[in-house]
Length: 74
Image 1 (spheres, rainbow, N blue to C red):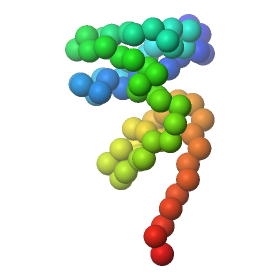
Image 2 (cartoon, one colour; image 1 turned 120 degrees about the vertical axis):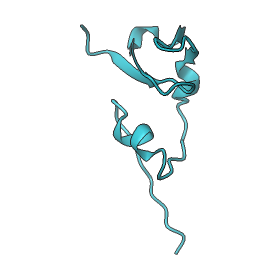
Image 3 (tube, rainbow, N blue to C red; image 1 turned 60 degrees about the horizontal axis):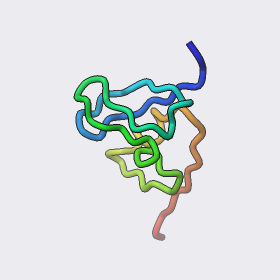
């Protein structure tokens, strides 16, 4: 097994899919529900707003580096 793996969460069934990083540009399917997993859409390479409800999935469970910027309106 290689260290070049990506964990992609299926947007339909929330299953975690372990995918080889070398297949980043391919359109892969979820192992559970067979939904298409477009990694460039799931991990867009741009800022993502994480809320209390999505913080665990977007930040804490992500298997790569995360740059976080926190904002308070006061």
